Length: 206
Image 1 (cartoon, one colour):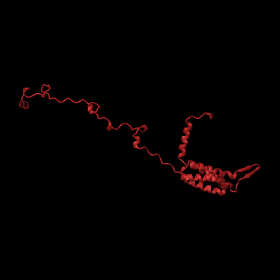
Image 2 (tube, rainbow, N blue to C red):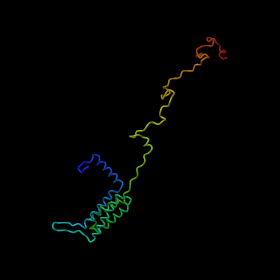
Image 3 (cartoon, rainbow, N blue to C red):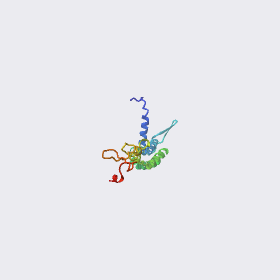
Image 4 (cartoon, rainbow, N blue to C red):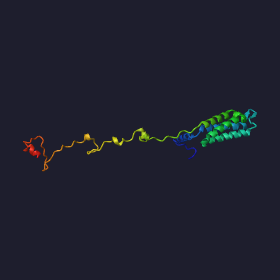
């Protein structure tokens, strides 16, 4: 892949989301402010301001001390990015170095480096990791995609009947029981009297 090949349409968005996730797990802005504060503190004592034909040297007698303070602030900024468990120590050290830079390094890099390092150290001390994600509850697991409930529970299914899964009221009614004689023919005595049937009540009872 050459340098002139354009990036994929979704590659930039994916990298941006990865950087956002990485930035959210550490005191990113605190480390950035601390590193930016160390640059003017280390630069101004060795810089020369050119005004026309006049060269103004801003070096101080403690130029080596200013360089050490600036380098330490940059190192502390990287430590806040990649060693977030030392954020309290790094924040306190950045604040102390910013205060020391006022008499040592041209009022802390003309107050620019002092203010940046001071704000970065305060952010590092006050930063705390976010709470871990909570496990998904059983009620959420019982729901399907989009929040819709899954299949109905077992109790709501229709009960099984001798005629399939149809309810009892839809099943045909059973035929009434009719007694049969010894020959197997039905012996229906309803609607007859003992006299018409050729038998009296005593004979039928016997």
